[in-house]
Image (cartoon, rainbow over all chains, first blue to last red; front, side, top):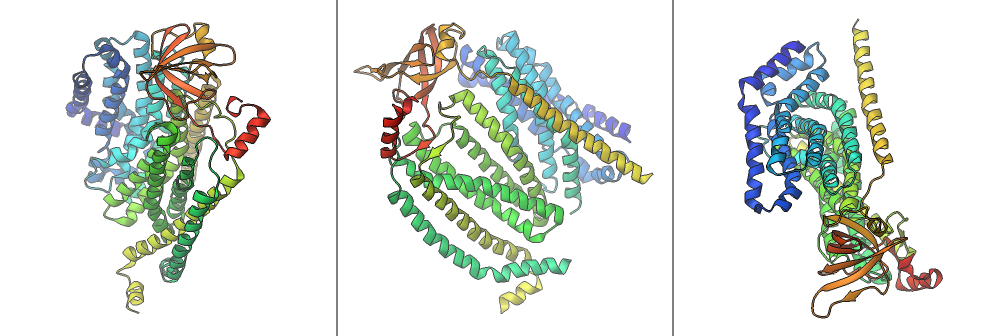
Length: 220
Length: 242
Length: 149
């Protein structure tokens, strides 16, 4: 059962390669629009580019997670999951991880290129990379939680961001401050530890929370 | 079991009409005295002069905004675990009231910010977390109104409120922390906030008044919620036709 | 068989929750054991620990009798101090109402050399004491200058 589900997930991601490449192109589009908006002032861009990278990652995770369970809900797959022998928590955990691999990981791979474009020092770009690796799984799981809340609603395009963005704030604060600290020469390890703490808290508990939300949504 | 639940709603609906009317009037009188106490009787501040008086609206509203959120999450929890109908209605009706309190706290905070900080809005830790609290409330309200099945909606919003309650301390501390990073803590930050008794008493009194107001409005809203849910049931038709 | 299955699930659940909460708190405690630098103090600047010509935050108390205002513009200069050292600050703009000598301030800006700071933004926060003026006077007589404690 588990293997079948993973296979199905992989197939659905690879069948629709757009779903991997479009977020990436979207990411580059937004990144390159910002210099056009605020002018090519290098100092200013250097100061805000980490923030822009993060904003783009938020958009991407929101786009990819806001209809996360929609197909499975409409096909009745969720009922199957709920009644199946395999533990649903494990399935959900794998689904979160796969969603992260296919939406956030490609962006993370391209951070070095962005750093070259904007002339970000190596140390800073490493910190940006670390905050993204630690922080984006949290964003993805919160986004999926938001989408699971809106299952019973036919049109939920703006609703999921409205619900989930407040929950993003702690992660954004610590990531941004880690990046800011490293660029003004202050120590940044503390923020990374806090981010990791949040990750260790959110990621294991999220499958249980999702399972409960799904049962609530199904049993109406 | 089902009958007792209906009876519970019916009992609440039919027995609280006078209570809410009385509480409404009572709040009005209490509020009048509180404003008089805060604006005329209480002395002015040694540093801020008269402008600090806005805290008699600002501080109770800010306290209530948090308290109402807690109340909403706890009643939501009770409704999810023990399936108490009245708790569902109470939980969701808290949301707009709490949002109003948050809005009052924000607006008065901005007005207060002008003379003390020199600007209407600073990204002060408390103002910012209050703003995020407003977003949390708006999320709950928006989620609720998007569902067509309102009973299902309450279950989901209760869950959102509970998760939000777990998150509020995290959000609060992260914003506080962010703020110390961006603005620097005030030098006396780690000292106990102290307030002279002649100023503290009216503040506590206003807090009490706001609480009474909250209960009065909540009862009114819950009545409306019960009416909306039960307007096609027999007892409601019987009751209204009497 | 069925009971052991549910028991197993429950065990896993307890283990996962335990793992989540314990690693969360352990990492948090570890994080907070590291000292966080919010802003540079005048002593650090004199000791040349702060980078010159890059955006930093500094904090300290405004020295009494150091505040000077230019006649025809908003330019001001003053000194801020901490326990050991003091540095000069230049600022061009509107100061917050609660800015006063003896009050604490936090500023963002750049160091132009190791004892002069050019501020872009000056923030003064009101302290969290509220009292009538008479009481403040009384406390002043008792403790010396109130805002200088």
